[in-house]
Image 1 (cartoon, rainbow, N blue to C red):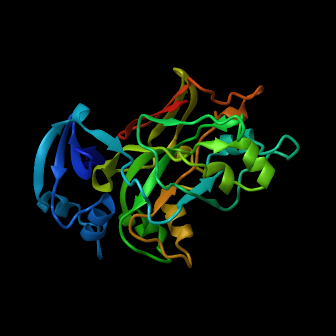
Image 2 (cartoon, rainbow, N blue to C red; image 1 turned 120 degrees about the vertical axis):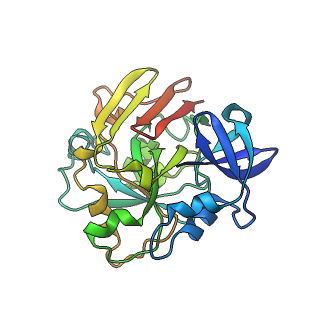
Image 3 (cartoon, one colour; image 1 turned 90 degrees about the horizontal axis):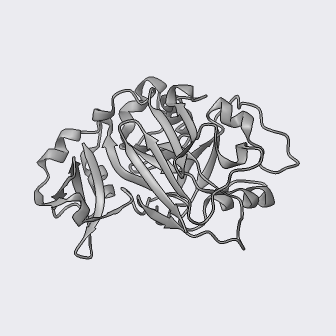
Length: 289
């Protein structure tokens, strides 16, 4: 199933997306996508329960305003750094730093998304803050049931669904502060969407093509099979001693081709259009204003 959060009549709703038609889920027990996730999982993530919720009005997609699938995540996003070997080799976070080696262990960092930005949102280019605004297409994994010390072989059964994320970054702030949090947590820097594809319909997430275009120029082009640490390994490793909770979102890293990786750099500027595409998950478009 494809699940969306949308606005109709100034009211936030959740619904099912089929083609270009939206069917509202109007069950009174569900006020948000997080409520839906909470209700369908206990020992297992029971996707069949989604069919049992009361449905309401049907809309044409162009009649509604899409929000990010989870507009206000309960916790910061869990992010993977340098999880594609070619990206790890291409980037340096200040001009004086040595380029990092491919990591031997997952590299985690945190990113704020409050709120996450929807498909077709605008990001303000504030040159007093940064002239090094960058894009990163990423597969986002949404956890569906609580778990700690999760065995790798069971890890994918903890997934509720998948969506696209664009890990927007102010590279100068990363260099200035010596870490990644501030440069990736500026308001608006977490576009996600356009929908969640539930894990039961995704199948194997380990063979998905990711691409990113800036003004129709293809900048990034890779496959999730190129990850240094695959999704099951990431979930298992992250959960060691750390409880993953329903609705948690993990950004699984970006491949080579970010603006920082070019010589000269290819950062984005006002008027640019960034399109992130992942197999089965559609297209997430962001406008630089």
